[in-house]
Length: 120
Image (cartoon, rainbow, N blue to C red):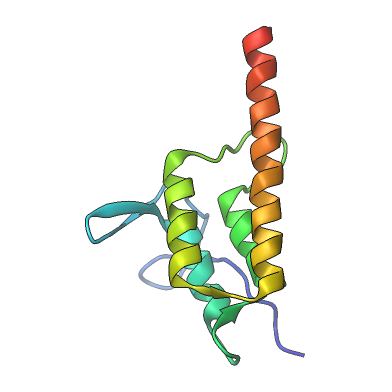
């Protein structure tokens, strides 16, 4: 059985460091979320056909929303980055469906929290 792929951040010397979810990467003058791009690159590495599977899409979702308790939000940069990932990386049909369902579910929860804060 192949080892599971993990999203890990390392310094230039190869030392492990805590993942910084605020880092950006500029591609053709546009800024993207580096953590999501790194997760997508890790997902297509290794043996296989270069497509992102369901388990790999969960890793990308985790990079997008590290916590499910409402402390992490889905902002405009992450939205643009996810559009870039969906356009430039290949997904299996099941992985694409799982990714879209996750984003929709988390977006609905974020909207509910925002409405509740405005009412209070």
